[in-house]
Image (cartoon, rainbow, N blue to C red; front, side, top):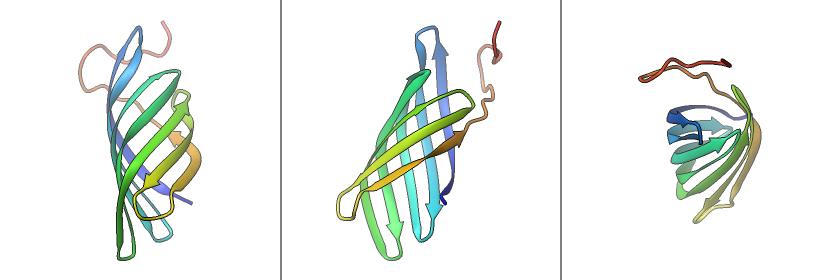
Length: 109
């Protein structure tokens, strides 16, 4: 099982949402740090560089994560790594929105 946390800043408009993110996650012996950009309109995509460590092995790569949903987001992530086997993950994000600035967050009308 993988555990992690993501912090993202997202702008929402009538055309969809876009933003930046930073995440870390870990599972049995593997640590992964990722920064990226994301865009969505119900279905979205996050992409960006990733750094992984496993024991003394440090590697870099690129992660692409398609996702869908609202609050609960099923996802698939593929991380290409330069010198290690690639990583494939599937799971469920739980994202809790909170307002930093702008209009209040509204669910519905």
